[in-house]
Image 1 (cartoon, rainbow, N blue to C red):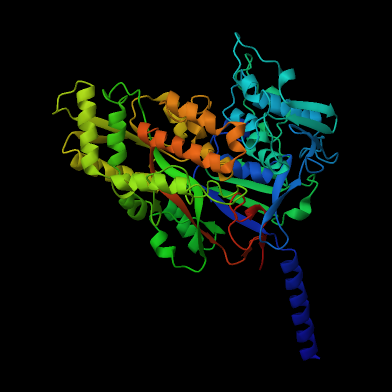
Image 2: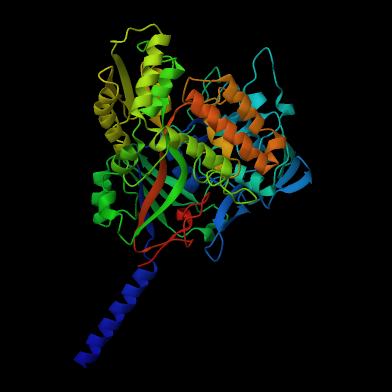
Length: 576
């Protein structure tokens, strides 16, 4: 009898444990290096906004993994179906009648029209306006509306975004695009709908700004998850949105996004099993590069250094000879391998993924045109590095600007020291540049934290070097678009150096005639990159290679990294 009781208790305990296991909460734990300054995706150029936008907001379309895990495709999210082509430049987008905000209020055509109109509003001057008007597609008169002046007004009625009925939008483009282009365009944080009552509640009296997204209470979710808590600088917590209409696509019950600036702190949590994801940086990659959990792939990003041409403390900052001197002074092999950690040095700027989504699948860097530019750069020295050329160009800059040969330049490297790779690079250049330039250059630092590089530059003008990285998804189809951020017409451009020849050649690349002929595009992109290098629009340094690690119990929805999609982390699952 006693044995029977013991067996019965054991069985009950087993059943109980199985029940707990079956209902165990699936928690995905990840991190951001810095917290989001605002949750308003219309008005932040910082990539960290992508995380809350991806999980907590819906867009017209969403990229989802194929069932076999070998690719991805687009589905309607707020849209009820894929875009329907009316004519060469006109598309109809039906909307789901079940789409709604986290509070249950409906999302309809009026919601989307208000959101896009605010995003492009010329008075608000949102930083991501260009991503609404001109990303994967170019919306008719979208940019003209956002950049209009009192002398050249543009009516909203002339913009190619229209309401046909309560649940139908019509999009008119400048030029011909595919349905895939339309879908891809309407997936970013810039085009998520905004909740009108809160957007208007936060609006300044002169309508030049809104506090929408500045706090949890000033933001409304519409995606598969909703923001449960936000302790600024510490953690963002997301839980399932019970009003989301496609919950079957998502498997986590809870997502914890910690704000962890320091890599050592991330590693400590990873080793303790308290993070499900880790991207090792230069300081720790040696430890993990051979770990079977580590995966790697090249990105669409080239790390670079912006040069200030308007520093009042630098008498030669406007000289192209000075810019060339700094370009040739970068020992990219040391910076990429030793300081960034197992990265690829690069003296060119068009990234390794550029062109991979073209019809031919031929990337620009693999093409004869791209290889010719690479060969030209290597003829100057490895990846463009040449101390001799650097000194020659600095001497020319001194002569051009009337400086005596014994002048010592003090150059300010402005950066966020929490970025370990750039911190190491700054320290290295502080030692290296005086050696290369034989004592004629001295490097000082201006460090900042808690603000973006863009905000820093808006507040300061006495910097000379500013590290940066931008990823233009459209470059995977149109290689030249990676230069988009360095046009004077881009509202949030990170530099203050513009060149008419460079901008004119970009316009050639961006013409419909060239965009419809990939071989011609390669030719024109080559010319653009040559101008870029001749004028030193900025200094390319490192072609980014990603190293990432995933917890053993994290089930990824794809077999390998998919450019333009990644690993599909939002669609992952957790096992016991």
